[in-house]
Image (cartoon, rainbow, N blue to C red):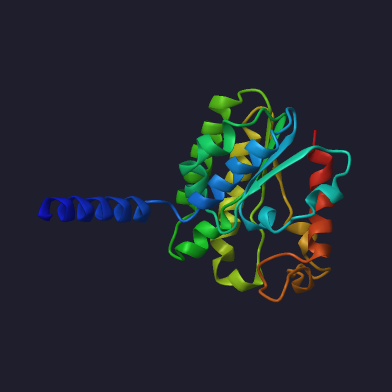
Length: 218
């Protein structure tokens, strides 16, 4: 009886610790896998990878009716998460273009984070993309300046500048700046483009993004 009890306890501890080690976004990735099993992803689509600005843009296909999109944004994700799940986010697909929006949550997670660290996280992910897809178009959407995260704007601006410089040196790569179109005539961030949380976009904000992104799409 003692042996059975000991075995049960060991099994319980093993299950507990294996669950503890799972990333907070592990289930999101499993959901993507389930979607892919149920509806095999199309080839030559535009693959969107990133955080909640993509996740919450649930009707994004309606903004680009002539494009085939695969939306693999998962809310709250950081560039560290894109790197952790790089194989899961890239291997199942054969896209003709990848568009990335991610980075602001890295700063929200750690207000003391230096722009250099976030840029390194992005370049690491970019290299993983390029290892698998050496020739397709890979674009990066600049970090937006959400009013709720104004304390982090300077770090975000520095990061945008450094990533823009990096992307200009890469082949088949573009930096898509959405910060200017989100300003009013006085150069201030338009708060009316954000929901009450002053973080996520309204439909009008999404429309403005779509107008900027559209010319970059294959």
